[in-house]
Image 1 (spheres, each protein chain N blue to C red):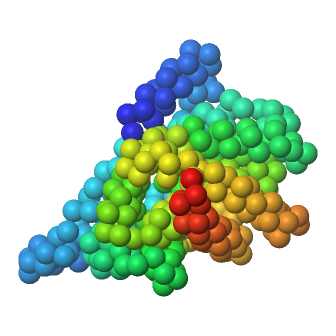
Image 2: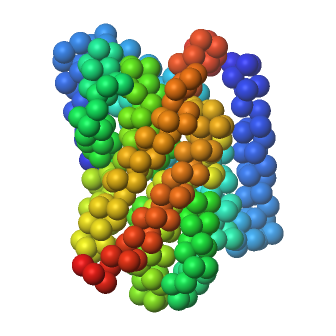
Length: 189
Length: 159
């Protein structure tokens, strides 16, 4: 617990400072500060409802998909089929990009290739089905289709480039909460 | 949101029926990951709430609403990279931009950088991938987003 707090000291300090700032904005009063507080409350509520679900799904994926299956379908040598499967996996998800990092960590642990992990991030960022539906509602089908058409080859290219540059030697994805030290702390907390 | 809740509930239910022990293990794993990231997440939310004090949707629209020249594309790329705006705000905002006469390329660059590039979430991304890889992914994604935007701008009148 103590170690957990120590490791997060900077974050906790910022949270406290933010709390003081909000308090001051209510007392002075400072409309901009109040608005920031409202936005924070909104983001936090969304976060508190959404992110735990996301992590439970990642946990389920981790427990139920054997390493051999991921390795075969998304590993090095999975080729175009691997790109297809990892894109499909990303498209069926929801949420902001930072929600995709834990899943990327699990994919890496299970033997997905660096290329497919970065393609996963690209597809997650730009091609989630719930988001596409929303986009076509506001910006029209033509815009959404054109954007998809241009984005797909580019995030695949980013995946290839990332693998070429950082994917060969010593590449790893560390899912926080998975490593030995972190796990110990999480248990204590 | 409700879809996600329903999917999670269904997955949990099926998983529990098949194997209760494994399901519990999955929940514990998920919560452990969540706990180790709770404070960094909180920091992201605070930084974004504060940043939006200065970058309101109105000021963004004003900044990018002009003619679709190179400057507007560059501004769109910068604003899209540094801000973290949820989709349900970003899409209406983009529709507003287009109404105000912004070029399609500007709207597309803004949207694509918003989706693919995250400067405020860089520390979080670096926790998983390391700084070098996180920076590189964001830089390449920024370049890709600009290409997407310019491509859409060019293709729009042909399709």
